[in-house]
Amino acid sequence: MKTASFSARFSLFVVLVAFSFASIELAQALRFKEGQVILDELADYELCQKRDYTGDWCHDALKRWVKSNAGDAFKAGKMTRKAMNHWVAVPFFHQAFEAKQGDCKDSDVKLAVLSALDLPKSQNEDVIAQARKIGIETCFADMKNDLVAKAAVGSSLFENVCKDLDAKGLLQGLKKKKCAELK
Image 1 (cartoon, one colour):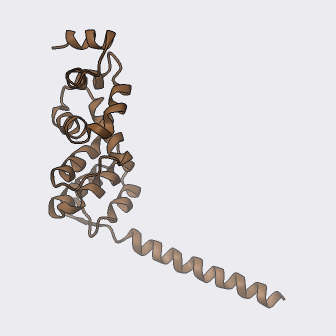
Image 2 (cartoon, one colour; image 1 turned 120 degrees about the horizontal axis):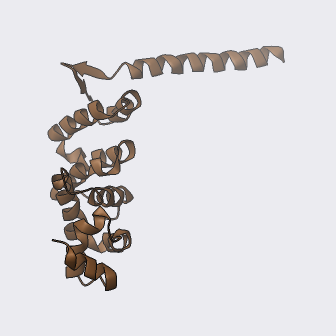
Image 3 (cartoon, rainbow, N blue to C red; image 1 turned 90 degrees about the horizontal axis):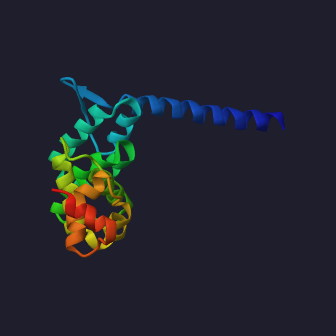
C-alpha cells in the first residue's frame, strides 16, 4: 500500500517538475531584438502581457505582428481588449472590418467601440473616428441600443455620437436639445 502511494506521489512529482521546466522554456521563448519585443506567433502576445507591466512593449509587438499578418487583426483586437484599456483594441477591429473580417455581434467589439467613443475628442480623434465608423456605420444595427443607452448628456460618448443618433431620429427631449447646442 505504501509503495503505491509513494509511486503515485513520485509520478506527480515528475509531472510537476516536467511542467516547471516546460514553463521556464515557454517563458524564455519571448524574444527581444534591438530593444523591441518580437512575437514569433500571435499567442506570444498573452505571454508578453504577463511579463510587461504597462503593456506598451507587447502592444507595439502586436502592431508589428498585425502589419505582417493582417488576417490576425480581429484576433489581435480581442486579445488587446482583454489585456489593455478596451479602446486600445479599436484600430485592430477597424482594420478587420475594413478587410471584411469583423463580427458586429462580438462583445469585445462592442466594449472597445463604446469605450473609444467615450474618450474626449482632444488627442483621440483617430480612434474615435475608427470607433464611430464601426459603431455608427458598419455595426449600427447591433450597437444601436447600447449607443442610445450609453449616450448620457454630458458624457464624451454623447458628444461624439449625438449628431449621428439625432440624424437617425433616436434622440428626444433633453438629449435632443443638448445635442442641438453642441457645435
